[in-house]
Image (cartoon, rainbow, N blue to C red; front, side, top):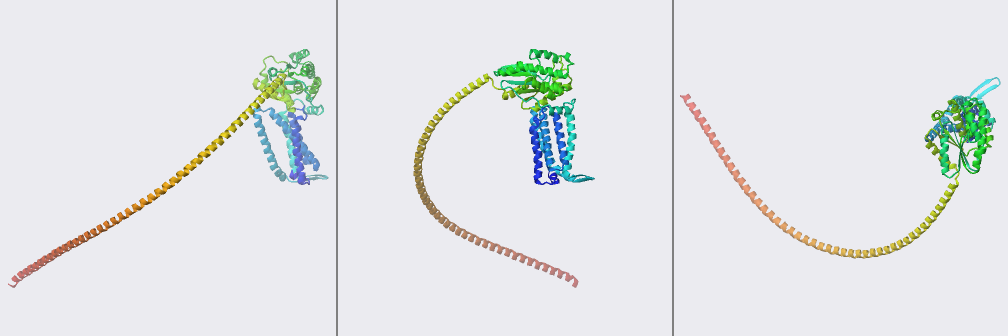
Length: 566
């Protein structure tokens, strides 16, 4: 949008207007989608909304005028909003209740991711494409990258719309232009105009959905609440209706034309409303009808090749605009419903599976167009679960019966009496609590005074004991000091005596050691003298031996010399 605003010669203001036009258009589309072309199949409306958004984006890229671009972007936003709301409604119809919240959350997350990617990737692609200019004589085609990106997106949405239509179309046998023409020119379905008195409940759904079972169960439950209940059906609730029913459902009437079939159903419905439904509602009864106008719109409109808008208009005229307060759509797959047949199928039940698939889509389209008046229940579950789901809705919208009003009045009176009794009991309880509180406070004051007196006495006693303790400690300290002084004196005397004895002992020991040293010295002297004497004697012996040896040598020498001289 920034680059496109710049290419158009605008600035931040134009950019803001473009964003506002696109987002505002989306909001308008989401808000108006449920009421837009209510007689048109929601599946076809989804494809048309996508194609409309694509054409608007393609034109927004081609047109160079600011005002026209803003208008086209707003229209593209409306188309996107209608597609988003319609797709969400269709997804809710085909999603089980316990998975719906998680599916919606996942879908919102995917949308946020796609928007974020578009905001990031879009400008990059626009910048990558860049401006281009083509000239051929007077024809000039000059656009920026953002305009080419818008044209590319719009062009891609067109085959996407065709693909969606091919995949989800529930009226493949009816030309789209016929449905679109009927939706645009034929007016809307009857505006909801329930009566002021009574309460009208219509049970709708394909054959085998369990409408009769649920009608009886709901009628019994509503009677139990105190309402007058009129249980009826279409066709065949009146004498005339029984004759028409035999014609409409008998397999021998297989050659009946589609228009005649639609008119016979409308005739039965007119008689039914005038003679059964409206009188019961006027007297305040609850009417539970097995089928009503939606069955004709779904069977003769969606199932046959007739216009649903025309069928709705005929039945609106036949019923004088009377519509149910609540329409319960029991939705079940035709294959599952066919397995429930216990008798030979009638003329409509004998129709092929494609017919019943179109009928089912027609019912879902009607429910998606007015979700406030419809309750879509999965009829493939147990009958008790289906009844419980319908009861929950009726608890919110069904008026109170006289018995319930009286019961409420009685309950209110009892509640008031109970409240008054509780108020009196509460007042008495509060008075008793106040009295007990006063007594408690007085008792606490008395106990507090006694406690203070006790603490005062304890304090005085503690002070007296503390004084005695301190005096005793002073006396003990004095006694301890005297004892320590005496012990110190005795210790000093003992130390003095011990020191004197030690000195005496040391002197004696010194004397002993001296004498011992003298004795040892004497002994060493004597030993030395003996050693010296021994040494002297040894030396003398050695000298004598030496002298004897020399004398012997001399004698030997003399003896040797004697013979030589002879």
